[in-house]
Amino acid sequence: MPRPTHGAGELGVTFERPDARHTLLVVEGEIDTLTAGALERALSGLLAEPAEVLVVDLTAVTFLASSGLAVLIRTANEAGERRLRLVAAARAVRRPMEITGSDQLFDLYPDRAAALSPSD
Amino acid sequence: MTVPGRTPREETGSVSDWDSHLPADTPGELAVVEVRTSASAALIPTIRAVASDLAARADFDLDAISDLRMAVDEACATLVDVAAPATMLQCTFRVHPEHIEVHAHVRGGSADAAVSTDTFGWRVLQTLADNVEALRQDSADGADPAGPTVGIRLDKHAGAPPR
Image 1: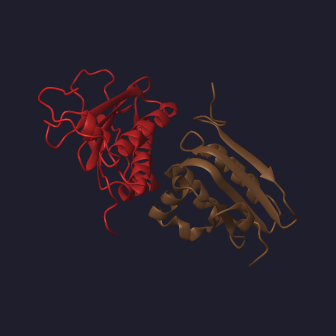
Image 2: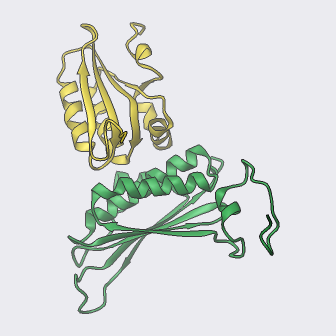
Image 3: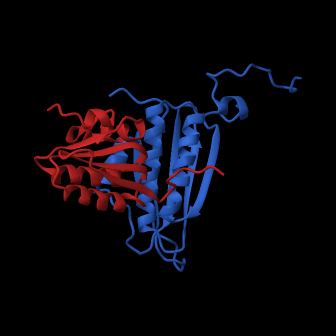
């Protein structure tokens, strides 16, 4: 029987280092009260990276609850001078950010290539 | 083939499932769906999937479907947090022509159990829903467990209201 790669309660998190300047965290699955803790641990790991630019790819995230949004907002604050770049195209992620106004706190990109581009 | 007493009509993409498959003789309220689960965070994905499905079938616009799914998730997560161990979460959806009303409740785990309304989650919930209120009713003497009934009622319109 076909099943999603990441079912309820599971969150896929993968680190990538595409080049010396960027560290990328790829997140897959649903971010809610069950998985916000796993996201928080992964984001702490991302903040500990020395890279100049931190990118979180949320393309494969299919749900984002306020608990997950709160973790992303805290991480953006902690990133300080290093802006946190988020890759988010789907409504499931964009809508919660827009409706809470938290989209202003992140640098949002429609795809990974744009987030990893050397401009600015 | 014709069903006696009913005018046959063609199915069209613009007619919602509720209009075409449910009797229209209950004005103002087309369908009631109750979901009852253990008060466990692990079951909230199932409840929010039901919310999303009901909104899609009721022809909600895509933003409103997304908002209702998130609002129901938020309400249930809040209630599961205050629920007594090994109790149930009950979530009732009333699907009206232009809006869905949701009432979720649990039995609180302590005498002072209540929905906290000074949290980020509650502010998000207020933004997502068109109307939201926290409910609380003390249990009758001798009830077991003794905690109050704690609930959240919210309303979501089919189309995003002008902002």
